[in-house]
Amino acid sequence: MQAANKGQTPAPLQARGLRIGIVRARFNEDVTLALAQACLDELGRLGLSHPTVIEVPGALEIPSALQALAGRGEYDALIALGCIIRGETYHFELVANESGAGVSRVALDYRLPIANAILTTENLAQAVARQDDKGRDAARVAVEMARLLQTLTP
Image (cartoon, rainbow, N blue to C red; front, side):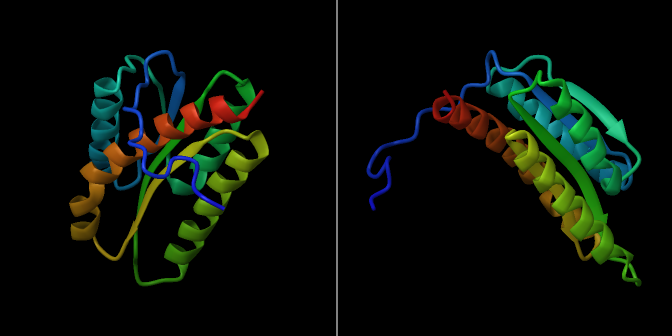
């Protein structure tokens, strides 16, 4: 089987006309604010002017908020922004695994693309090093997947 776009340059991303919602966790707020700013800047660069942005306490609450937004049926894509930094207990694994699984479950249950930019890092320095790139990446992933699903669904 050959790739459908083999040898073709992908079309430039265009967010104009899309409806995108963002859920940002406040925990590790300096990092999540930077993630959100990078994401919003990139969405703006791609032509989206007014995404919905809501805040939740932490990463474990992100899937519930995504589920509520997805249930409205108003969005072409959603974005999850959070930051989980390893501590000295098992809590890191619990939060990382459950928040990631919850995001995936909402995406599959609602057939809605969700860009997961919940950082999981060993320390704050790693989170800071990734916050801008991952925020921009989340915006691009959401737009690309929203456009792709528009072509795949009747």
